Image 1: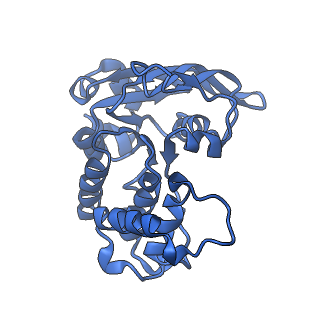
Image 2 (image 1 turned 135 degrees about the vertical axis):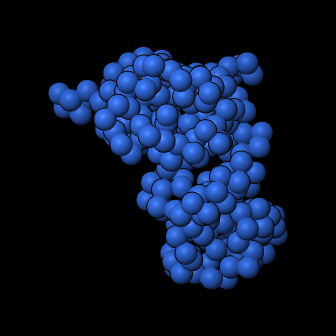
Image 3 (image 1 turned 30 degrees about the horizontal axis):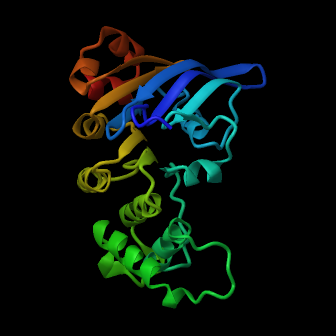
Length: 257
């Protein structure tokens, strides 16, 4: 593995479902330690691309590298163990477990605990301490013993971000982390994401352009399955090709321009 390699590199990535080609030769390099936002009109293939990177879908062509190593033939759990973790559009937590128990589950594998019937969870001091640390970081200590299903929507999203980072992954994928939030909740989520991704590589799909331009170091634009631009937010904002891609899309164009 090359230490100078991009955290994630897409090389002519393609994905077809039957005769329908969704991703059409996407190319992108995501630098180590940077925050990238992936934007594009509805139907551009953003979620499909996320699923390809995280191993949920197999590639139809091309290659994906994680820290210089191909992960094209890897399963999701194998990619996770190589240091990439992701969240989902739909909150993905254990609703009947407490906040603390959700986070403790998330840290076990990274600490070397495998499938075991003889370890008492309450005696795993390192796992308990790390879960407590992450819980403090995401601002949910006061909700420690509450079942996750009873949290507010914003709190559940914060918990999912905590679960995503708890395993110590250096590359984080967040799929629409502020979707469904009020403006104040989204602002709080941005500050949380900024805090927990310091020193890490972030790739997020986000529709809220104020979040994108506030948080991202660089913005990649996906249109009809191809990356048409990747640049600093200020450059993306005035890019004519990007503006044309959003014309006629009221939920995107006004916020972009």
